Amino acid sequence: MFVLLGGGSGFVGTAIRRLLLQRGHSVQLVSRSAGKDKITWNQLRKEGLPECDAVVSLSGENILNPLRRWTESFKQEVTDSRVKTTAALAKAIADASKPPKVFVSTSGVGYYTPSLTAEYTEDSPGGDSDFLARLCTEWENSAKLPDSHSHVRQVIIRTGVVLGRDGGAIQQMIWPFWLGVGGIMGSGNQYFPWIHIDDIAGIFVHAIESPNCPPVLNGTAPTPVTNREFTKAFGSALCRPTVLPAPGFAINWAFGAERAVMLLEGQKVLPKRTLESGYEFQYPTIEQALKNVTS
Image (cartoon, rainbow, N blue to C red; front, side):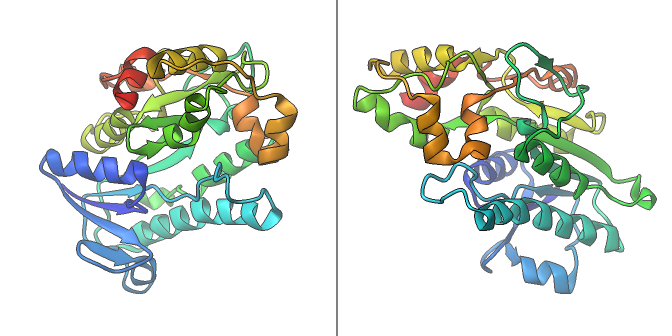
């Protein structure tokens, strides 16, 4: 298949591209800069969609970027980087004389209302109580194609926190443990919806290749853990202590209350439809995943 990756130069996009190439597919990126096997977003708008079999929307500014203050302008940047780029791909598909067979778009587990007790599957309703839930809903709506394009199969993947050796959440989490101060965040009782980089790439490729794939897949591991359990497993994998907790007020101060929800309030998200669709996880437990990414 010939696959167009919108925003495919990031951490997750690079892993998806690598796996697609390993499986014999051809890949072209939509990027801010031109280059080999790339087109720019301006080219997409002016020239339309290249003829392809699949389109994947991956763009999105890192919402937990510690170097960016949580201001109204940054919130708008976070929104635009997801909604506008996804909408641009959806429009290009709708306008194409020969549209692709499948359009796979990204969302996040922030779609579900944070809870210490609720269990969420792909069939669970979304929330609208906070910025992240509203963002995910708007993000997913931006991917919708006109009714006249019902022949284009659509899949939305709601992604959890991605763990990987070469980047992702691990780079942001690892330094406190080497200083001996890694600890739980807030109460530690909140769920931490995680997934290994190889599995999130695998789920995207599975969605592209599987014609009977459901329209929504949860991109989270099948064994949810709390922040306390994750912290213990992470410290054990690094052979480092998990001594000093990060109190909620400190997380709120560092990230802003709306963004801190991702760290202090979690969701227990299960990949029910993902498993039913036939995807087999390479790293189903947190111990297996952390052993891989910290070795």
